[in-house]
Image 1 (tube, rainbow, N blue to C red):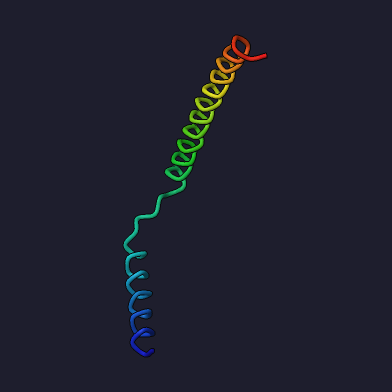
Image 2 (tube, one colour):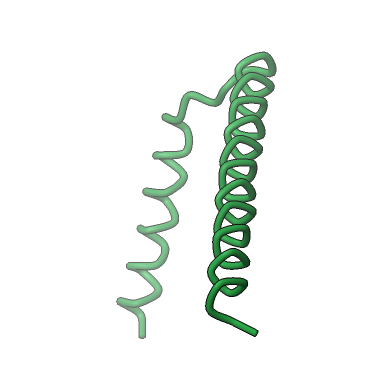
Length: 68
């Protein structure tokens, strides 16, 4: 039990040391990265939407030919 507590304490100390080494982004970098992520997500969403519309169109054509 004591060794687990000691290992947990060492782990927390190592994590704290690593966090102090991190170079955190400044406000302009953060805004820019956030904008890039939002634009990328919107582009992917539009592509998926277009694929959905196209597949629905072709399925409707096929169902119109072979369906009721």
